[in-house]
Every structure is written in structure tokens, then in C-alpha cells.
View (spheres, rainbow, N blue to C red):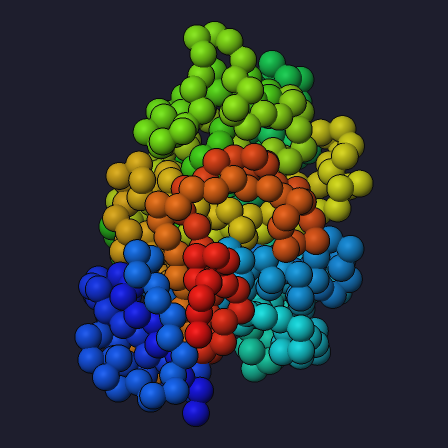
Length: 475
Ligand SMILES: [Zn+2]
């Protein structure tokens, strides 16, 4: 028998409405007991981990991750991507199907599940493509993808433009009880835009990607969900109008949902103009938050700030799809998260090689890494900024994605898989992308002082990441 006892932590399990100081007993990879009497039930030879002062919660789930395997393993592979997930506190991730080949057949699903079994350190769930080769022309075999084990369908990275095809996809998905996840982008409106269409793209001379390009497809998806009854999930929401549309549709009972990524509710398009411009404009609210921290960087009046994170203008680590938007959009995303319109948090972890990103802004691929910074950034902007309670924040990373994807995860209920995340919401650290477990280093949060640190990640009772020295002296 394999037994592990976590003692003295604050256990927050939103699925069971639990928030209490409690012990957690894990036996043979399952949750065996939670509460004051858990220690009494532990076998004498159980390993003990003192997690006093830390939060203990169901293992976090990130439903939007690009693992790049098969076909693009110079950027990332299942071993490195899942190692980054473990460091970020994630015990389950959903990989996107825009690999090479795309995940549009049962064979590719089987290949990834096999590789994940061999080289993954966290649970890997697979999403299948909506259309063959993600080309948006012909439906993928959704029934056989479901039988092969996909938990959702999406053409992420691309967006089905043909509304009739999207309708059929929704009808099949409903038949097979799969959610349809959509990267919302109207190609005719966005064309070759590379950043948010607003003040900064004009000032910088870069082609604009208007908010309406996202909102148009969010509106389409609401109509499709209403028409077909399928559960449609809008990925990486960035625009104020998208939040308003989903809020209104949910009131009418439409089966629509949305997710947000930290970069969209931390940064704005001013970041593309460089750190000086960002900290002088849209970065100010973040400084106010930071200044409450002991030893926080102080911004001298009008002067440069050597102790704040800095980056040049046109830094391609600030290029992602959808793009960073205005401060007003950022506020709307934060409001949507606070009032429950947006139920799910995720990274859209999108690794790219240095040589791919080290080109002119126009030519760089979209996307940034995010698995190792997303929990801290979410804690800072939502919990520390007093917008969302800790249990509500944890729910957006656990029970909410589990519910959308019909996963038996995201809970510390007795008998559940012992996937557990231990973190300290108050611990400060500085992110250094060179130390990341990911193969790629394309993060815009280099040198950021973050508040909230993952201390331990446990998958099926096995410690896959332990932060030293916080849990040093472990038996
Ligand atoms: Zn996408």
C-alpha cells in the first residue's frame, strides 16, 4: 500500500464546497480521507508532508495547451510540456489538435495518448479537430474521435468560417456529448492583422486585428448553441464586446461558455510599444498592486525604473492571437471573471523557438508560453486585487473545466483520483524563463515579480513536482 498524508493545510475544494484546515490522506493514488480524522486513518508507514501555511486544492486543469507533438517537437514535446505543467501546478491538461499531422483521426489520438502514457508526467487529455486537417472545409470524423477518447473538438489556431459547416459540427458534437471549443476569429475582418486595432497599432504602424473580428464569431457561436443545443465554448476571450454577448446569452440559458488567459487580463496593447510606455499608461494599476508588496519596485516620477520588468517596443513575446487589447477590454475581462460570466481560466500555452520569434513583429508567429506563470498572475489580478475569492478562483481551474469536458477530475471527493495541487498564494518569486521546464522561452513575463507559488503537484498520489526548500525535510 502506498500512503501519503498532507497535514495542516487549508483545503479548498470548490466541488464539495469545502474550505477548512484539514488533512488529506491519499492511498494507492486515490483520495481516501479529508478532514480532522484523516491522520487517524493513516497507516503507520504513511509518508507525511507538512503543508501548513499552504493551500491544498484539487489538481489544477488547463484545458488549452499546445504540446506541439507530433510534428513540431523543436518547440515542445509531451515530456517538456507536461513538466512545465507540473511546475505550474497543473495535474491535467488538454492538448490542442493543431499539430502535424493535425489530430483529426483516431490514429493520431491513440498516438498522443500512448506517448503521454510513456513520457508525460501529468494527465494529458486530447482535443480533436472540428474539420479535416483544420482546414475548415470538411468535417473530421467526430464520432470516431470521440470513441478514440477526445474530450472536446476545436480547430484552435483556426476558426471555422463556414456557418453551415459549424452548424453540422455542433449537431454531431451534441449527439456525441462533446463540447465545441472555438477560437473566435472572423478572417474577413481580421485579414493579416498582427495586434489590436486601436491607438497603439496606428502609432506603431502595425496592421490591426479589430475586436469585432472576435465578437462577430462569439455572436455566431451563441446563435449556433441556441440553434443546435450543443455546448459551445469560446476560447481565449480578449474583447469587451465578447464578454457582454456571453453575459446576455447566459441569462437566456444558452449553453455557451468562455475562458480567459492571464495575458489578456494583465497586459494591454500598450505593451507592444515597450515597457516605458506600458508602465506609464496601462501598467499603472499593476504598479499600485505591486506597491503594496514589501520591497516592491518604486517608480520614480517620470524617470526610468530599473527595478521594473523592461522590454523593448515591438517585442514579439507580446504577439499572440487574439492580441493584447485596450485597458477597457482588460477591465471587461476582469469583470467577466468576477461576475462568473467567464467560468474558466487557462494559459493558451503556445511555445515557439527563439529563431521563430526573433524576427520582425509582422513575421513572428502568434503565441506565448504560460503554464508556469498563469496561477501567480491569476492570483495577483483576481485574488490579491480583491476581485475574486480564492475558492472561486480555484473553481475556474478545477471544477469548471472538469464540468465542461465531463472529466472525473477537479475534486477532492473520497475515491477521486489523487490529483492535488499545493500552493502558497502569498509567496513572492521572480519568473526567469531560462529556468522554465518548457523547451521554449517565449514568455513576456521575464523578470516579473509574481505573488503566489506552486509548492507541490501530485498526480494520482505521485509527487511530480516539489518546490524545495518549502517542503524539505520530508520523510
Ligand atoms: Zn487559439
